[in-house]
Image (cartoon, rainbow, N blue to C red):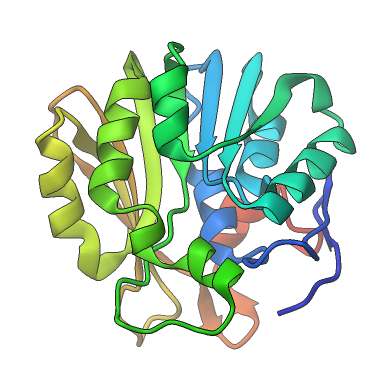
Length: 238
């Protein structure tokens, strides 16, 4: 993966210090997460480069956008990316684990967003930083869900991207903490491939779930209108 800066339309992300580089999952989640309820406060769990926080700073007028990052180098990079952005006065990154953050912070957030580690298979690389960023045992889903339920405001939204195969178990676990799916986006690479990712927005309200399917490409590097419409405010070439 490239260490080169990733340039969006309104901001640039340095990513040379981060194990996980800018990818489609984060861009989709940052563009899709609902801001229609006009969140005053946003929390980005496991921020990495800070891309989700920056996308939301571009998309909404939230006065408080906090991020949490446990990895030393990723934290340093996130802070630098925040400082060089147009919205540095609204962005703050905590160098902490999610467990530490939940114990110390009394605030509630109107929007919580997370692109969590989710390779739960028994496979590790020799890169400890990448493993920390990528494997579910670094942030187990049940811990993430419980923490989000404690930090989310009554009318808040919790948006996450996970492997499609993990969706039923994730939703069942969320229901144990009073969180229910409000919107879902199922993502597939092209029309002939199976759904690979699930973007899910949870709230404390039990209501009928709105589910949509997004296909990214019609053929290699030929993007669908739906994908372009979702990401065009960010990608330079959209």
